[in-house]
Amino acid sequence: MTAIVIPAFNAAGTLTDLIRRVNGCVSDTEVVLVDDGSGDATAAVAEREGARVLRHVRNRGKGAALRTAFEFVLRRSEFESVVTLDADLQHIPEEVPKFLEARTRTGANLIIGARARRGTAMPFHRRLSNVVTSGLVSARTSCDIVDSQSGFRLLGREVLEAVQIESDGYEAETEMLIKAARKGLRIVFVPIETVYANEPSHMTHWATTKRFLKVLLQEF
Image (cartoon, rainbow, N blue to C red; front, side, top):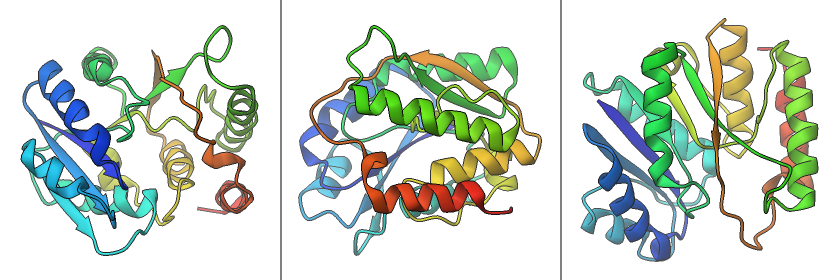
């Protein structure tokens, strides 16, 4: 069984569509949504759509939300893997089966959705951020990391058991990747599409960039 993990903050407007589309394209799954201190109806909408809802009283960050979800999954023996995707519909729910198929076909421990850069709607600043951060993480891990910042991922249960993330923000996904590589876990990539609106990339924020660099240079 697979847990579909959705970290969410003030995402009530997209959750009905997201959860229904996830449930429509996969079976033998449970949607686990972490309401990260939302001030809107995020939790109510998710519960109405049948999701398991875990709540933070205050906003703690994406990494903290993922950690809460992973701790829940590890307490449930029926979950063999986790698929993480964002709540804002930048990830296409109908692509979840790609990750499950890749897991079956390759036996990989960590499967990451890789976004195309050229010939897509990815804004220039995101392409630049993606190229730079993926290059730095590749150098750090001695692995060919195609897209280090993609939050659309499948993690086998063995990854959650072997790797614990400590970061609270968006840098947690980089921490997970570095630690998994250092553990010798197998990482593969599958191509995905991503829908872009006009929202800024979090990696362009100086505070987030500093946290990313701290994780990148930290010894694990």
